[in-house]
Amino acid sequence: MPERKSYKITHYRKWCKNCGICVAVCPKKVYEIDRNDRHAIVHPQDCIGCQMCVDHCPDFALTVEEVKDE
Amino acid sequence: MRLDFLRSERLPNIWCPGCGNGIVLRALLEAISQLQLDPDKVVLVSGIGCSSRAPAYTAFDNVHTLHGRAIPTATGIKLANPDLSVIVLTGDGDCSAIGGNHLIHAARRDVDITVVVFNNYNYGMTGGQASPLTPAASITTTTPSGNMDRPFDLVNLATGAGATYVARSGIYFTKHLVDHLRKAISHRGFSLVDAVAQCPTYYGRFNRKGSAGQMITSQKDWMVLKNVADKKNPEELAGKVVIGEFVNIIGARQADIDAAKEQS
Ligand SMILES: Cc1ncc(C[n+]2csc(CCOP(=O)(O)OP(=O)(O)O)c2C)c(N)n1
Ligand code: SF4
Ligand code: SF4
Ligand code: SF4
Image (cartoon, chains in turn red, yellow):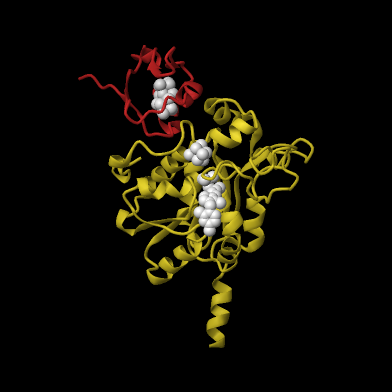
């Protein structure tokens, strides 16, 4: 069975406005807006690298890259 | 997207949380990256409005003009240096209200520029007033009991005025948006993309459209791809907004230009 790919999510806190769009578009529920109304990465291991959050973040605050271990 | 196209020292941008403008801007930078244009040959021109601030976040040469006047400025730039890709970034108010006359005449004359309309259905910058693209019955600051007027259909307006490339897309459909921006920029002649964005602060709040996340994902419910819409009857399409490519005429003006040359 092919090994499941893993991804590295980078969140630029300085640019993020905690709007929640990434929460709404992510198919894997990787993000949450937490109790303090702040963006939080809660299930990074579930990320499938689809780039939905990256393409829809209005503040250029996310990147998602495949982790290549060699 | 080429990150060096972004003037990152100017971020965070001034837009409200969840504003759609950043998503259109990102799609535009992606389209320019995919086209592999020489960044020194791209010029962005804008008018006034929240959306018209977009060019200032890019590394391209840009001009922030007067309200409604981006298109004539862009026309001048293109005439002076036809080698440039001249792209107008404008709001629904900027291009269809105060700048409406410039829009229809640039389309009529098939000026070789691209107009990207950040269409959030209202005047964001000045506090959420109605624009000529505000849907009927919508609440805005100037239509507190619902808009009595009908909006322009921007696609039909541009098509009727003679634009030779016309498309519409939405910020939920980012790949679709990038594809149509790319085609518009590479089109020779006047091209327009109606990029349906969102203003959660005014239009969204006044019309109870929910959170920024709900607004953007709802585009899946009220937008229909043109190839799907073409198979439906008008009743089925009531309340829906059709996205896709509507006009793509190559070499439209060549016969006219040849005839004019013949005369001279
Ligand atoms: C000549 C002139 N008239 C009016 C204004 C006020 N004004 C500033 S922005 C704007 C409307 C902006 O709406 P839109 O183009 O839809 O852009 P948005 O802010 O929604 O992105 C108006 C009327 C102005 N700046 N200049
Ligand atoms: S979409 Fe971007 S700005 Fe909005 S909460 Fe997510 S990371 Fe922050
Ligand atoms: S890349 Fe896709 S799966 Fe991963 S966090 Fe972003 S939206 Fe979620
Ligand atoms: S007022 Fe509306 S258009 Fe302007 S930045 Fe805020 S959300 Fe965006």
